[in-house]
Length: 341
Image (tube, rainbow, N blue to C red; front, top):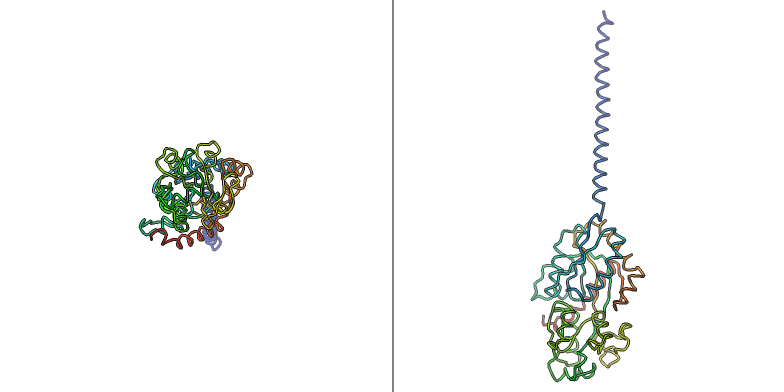
């Protein structure tokens, strides 16, 4: 009788134990499924990039920034494995494009060029009241450094070289092109006025191509631009470059004197053009972009093609690029009085 009572009790105990073991297995399986699902989600999240990337250029097509971007894009596409669409967003001295870049979704699929000193003068100028500044961007790399240049019409009779232009501008008001308030072109004209007593008055436009057309058409007296934006036209005798705003001659305009050798030392000008993403981008995605742009910019064929377009490649990684922009920022702050701030 005791044995008959024990067997059911033992059977019940065994059933509970097996159920517990089975529950543990089910729980473990469920946990493993969740982990696998989580790993898949992470893998999907890190599958960057998997679609086209838009690269904003804040100036019109045909200018130095646009040309350099379109030369570089295919080399970075090879590294990333996705297309890069160069999107021109001119206007507001560059701020139409920079505002769109700063406010874009920081997912890595919208990046863009930022231009120095133009960017900094835009947000340092209290009159412009910009909402964004250098801290609004995550820097990827610097790409180009492009010295300034001064050019005139080939049939200009009032002045035919930089010395004659300076002397004329000391006695007369002379209009000069500019890609925007506080642009490198604008600052160059102001610095010449301050140091040598010239009377250049800047006429702001949407880009170098527009400025070139204005001078060639006789609507503006002098073209202030960058070497890359005038070298080909100079060689084709469409316009006459009379000075490069650097200490030494440009290898792309070897027949053109520098301001320094012409007796106007102390005034230099150049534009730096680099690539940035909106602030807040995932660090892993930022590093992917940085690595791809480094390889693309350092590619020998890319450098050669930029040189053919009279563009000087000056690669800097994100950290070094930030330091350079901070130095430019401090220099502009030192020009507050000149800018009427």
